[in-house]
Length: 184
DNA sequence: CGCTTTTGACCGGCGC
DNA sequence: GCGCCGGTCAAAAGCG
Image (cartoon, rainbow, N blue to C red; front, side, top):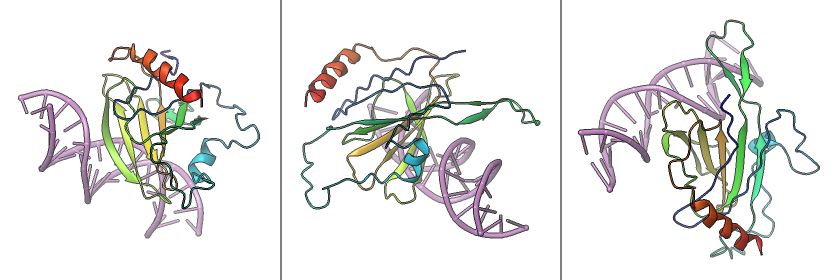
């Protein structure tokens, strides 16, 4: 159907954040090589042991230094009635864990916030956004880690079935930024 | 004015 | 069956 490649050119206008992209569609991916836990693990154990982050909060201008990215799946969506039918497909969910000062990472699409809930074991709330394009049911949620406020987890759900509104030439800009930050 | 954000209510799934 | 939990709705406020 309308499976577009997960193409997310981040272009945060304010303080830019780093980005990374991982693509995976197979619901049974063994991306849990040795230490990386899956998305569920991420959900349950979001407390990433920020070693040496206790008192030495020298993260003032250290904006993005590292960026992790997880890939999840296992999201089922029922089409029509659930009359005993097993018409459930799994929507892939892409989780980006970026290091940024701001929560709103502009990826070029237009989002409308539709909810915000407090997360357990986390003092920061989680925001729910939805793509405002008609017929586009792409959702995303943004969450910040309480342990390390510099880490923002953005989870995308679904694929956009329409082009990006903004000009894509930001991508070049982002790429250059990536190179800059990767050179560290 | 039209759209977005805010915020509590509501709802379905799941564990006890 | 009940209550918790995560996710969504919707009314009203807010903003350019």
